[in-house]
Length: 559
Image (tube, rainbow, N blue to C red; front, side):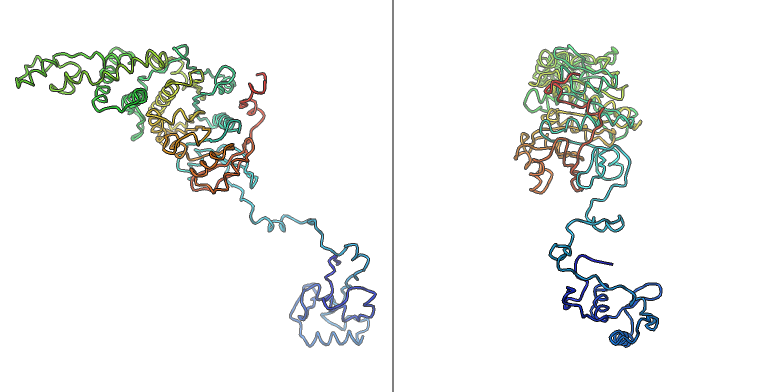
C-alpha cells in the first residue's frame, strides 16, 4: 500500500532517503505500524486470518523488538510466531525530494471514486423522497429533485391539508395560467368534472377554448345584449333557499333569495333594510308559485313587476278599519292582496317596501344584464354538465360594470345547487376562476365564498388566480379568499411591495421576498398550511405546452 500524503512515518523521524540510510529494521517496523494503525505506543499484530489486534502482550512485543534490533531471528520469521504476518509487510515507500517539490504528496483537490454505500453518509441533509404515488403530478422539487404532487383531493384524503381549494398568485407571464390549464387537463384523467369560468380573452375567444376544442366540447359563451347564451338568475335548479331533495344534510348552498339580494345590494350600493328584504322575499315567493303553476321558469322581470305593482286587494280598507278600531268583515280579511302575508295592519304599507328594489332590477334588466340572467336558461347550459369539461366563456363581457361579477356568481351558484342535488353521487368537481378578483368583492363575492366553504359536502375544489396582492386592501374579501386556500402557489413577484405583502400574508421569512422576486418562468413556492414551503418547477409535456400557451398573440404564432 502506498500514499501520496507523506504521513507514513512518525512525525519525529526524517522523511528523505538521503538522510535516513542507516535507519534500522526496527525503526521501519515501528514507523509502518504507527502509520497504518495511527497509534504511537499500542502494540499490534495480525492473526492467521489477517485480523488486526491491539491486545498483544507488551513483553512479547518488547522481545520482538530486541530480536529485530540484534538480528537474532535472522531470515526465519517462523520464530516470531503470531507476529510473523506483521513482519512480512513491506516497508513504507520512501519519500523523494523531487516528488515533494512537484507536489506529489499533497492532498488531491478532486474527489475520488466511491460506492453508493459509502457516499450515502455524505448526503445527510438531502430532502427525503416521497413514497406516496397517488394523485396527479404537478412538478419537480428544485431542492431535492423529487416529484411534487399537488392533487387537492388526494392530499385531503391523506390528511395533508384540511380543504381542497387552491390559489395561484403571480405576475403576468410567470406561468401561473399554464399551471392552471395543465391541472385542468390532467383532472380529466381521474374522471373528474372540470368547470372553467374563462374571463381572459385570447384570439377572439376565451383562452380555454383550445382545450374545449381538443376535447370536442362546445363553449358556453356569454355576450352582451343577449347575443350569446343566457343563465336565468331564478333558474329552478337554484332552489329558493338552497335545499334540495336527495341532497346531503347540511349541504345548503346559496339559493335564489341570497343571490337576488346580493345582486341588489351591490347594484344599489346601500344596505338592504329589513323591510326591503321582506318585500323581495315575498315577491320572489309569489313569482315562483305562479311560474310553477304555469310550468315555466320564473324571471327577474316578473319579480320587478311584483315589487312595483303588487296586488293591493282590500289592504287599504283593512288598514283604515284597524286604525279606527273597527272590526274587519271576512270579505276584507280574506282579500288582503299580496301584502296579506304581513297581516292586516301592515298589508297596505308593505306594498311600498320593495319599490327601490324593483326599480333597480328594471334598470339592470334593461341595461348591463340584458339577455344574460333575465331570460330562461339556454338549453346549451343545461346540457353542459353532461360533459366532463364545462367551458363558460365570459371573456366577451365588458370589464366595467356588474355584468361579469353577476354572471360569474350566478353561474357558480347554479353549479353549486346542481352539485348539491347530486351530492349523493360523490362526484369530484373542480371549478376554475382565472380572474379571482371578480369573486372577491361585494355581496356577490360573499355569496361565492359561502358556496366555496361547502367544498367537502359538494366534492368541489375551487381554483383561483390573482395578480398583484398589494392591489387588494388588507380587509378586502379577495384577500380572505386567498387566505382560505389550502394550497397556494406563489409565482414570481416583480414588485417589492407585492413580495412583502405575500410574505406577510402567509407568514414567510423576510428573506423569502428575494426568492419570490428571482423566480424563473414556471417556478413557484408552494405553501400549504402546517407544511414547509416547496420550491417547485412546473412541468409540462409537449402536448400540454401546445394547449396551454398563452403567448400566441404576442409571439405571432399561428394556431
